[in-house]
Length: 323
Ligand SMILES: Nc1ncnc2c1ncn2[C@@H]1O[C@H](COP(=O)(O)OP(=O)(O)OP(=O)(O)O)[C@@H](O)[C@H]1O
Ligand SMILES: [Mg+2]
Image 1: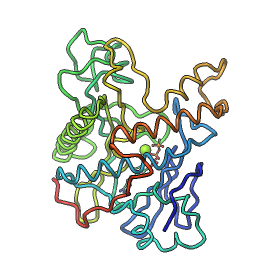
Image 2: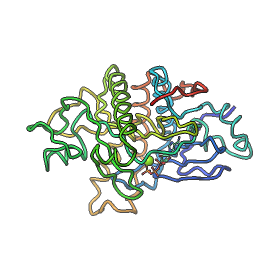
Image 3: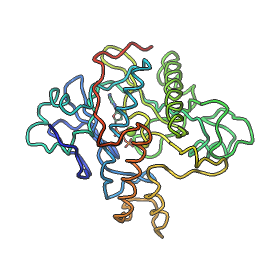
Image 4: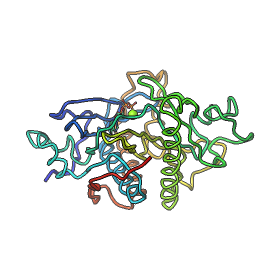
């Protein structure tokens, strides 16, 4: 069957209706109930997509999502995944067999149940980093709620916090209060989103901890399927949607290096005069190579398996009831 893709893929062009092209992924329609989520090898830094793809990155992102969903399924979390197994995906989407290079989709595609996504980015933060650190430094709050005084950058919060954001169509997501989530989706659903997000974060943080990694923060999305069920959707606990830090590099008072994109960020920071607007400077080959290595490392570190030895899983046919 489909060989493992090794060629870098900047954008997929599959013979299925294209529903959305994001910064990194393409979403295709397979049937009224099923979608194919395909991760390319595009890499973004400072919200700008680089011209050069990073080989293996899409495969790493998709299979990390699949690996986590399999574990979360065991913990009773209802999610959208149907299969990451190329043979099974072909059975649902036989058009992929026609004239299509498997490198364009196999192992980087996840077949999922179609849902209506809820308009909330469900961020959970266990540590003070990124925009949360910025807000806290400026106003002593997180998502508008006061935090204890005297916390430092990268410090662990007294307890993990649900810190929702809007889904911005363009530009940066904006932090919103829990009250705004209630207004957007209703009180019961807002409470379900908060509880599920915190529960999933707890599983993620504990699992990462066993592997020497801190899950500083992460972002989940949820959707409602045709049967009215609330499902975990989108990518899950990937390095693109989460901040992982090696435990050994964690120091309160400074920002740890990014496990995955640091070579790209370091290079961009060394380029004089780039205003962080497109077009980005071209990435040297050594930077691309170092970034691929980082993605392969994080896959190995998290799953305990080399990417080439990992078998893409299939999922149970019926998601469990939640909320
Ligand atoms: N099971 C699903 N059903 C319906 N929509 C889904 C499902 N899983 C993910 N999505 C949606 O698919 C889209 C994936 O898009 P993607 O994240 O690649 O790009 P984007 O969100 O448009 O932009 P960005 O690159 O900034 O994230 C998201 O809007 C997400 O809500
Ligand atoms: Mg997105």
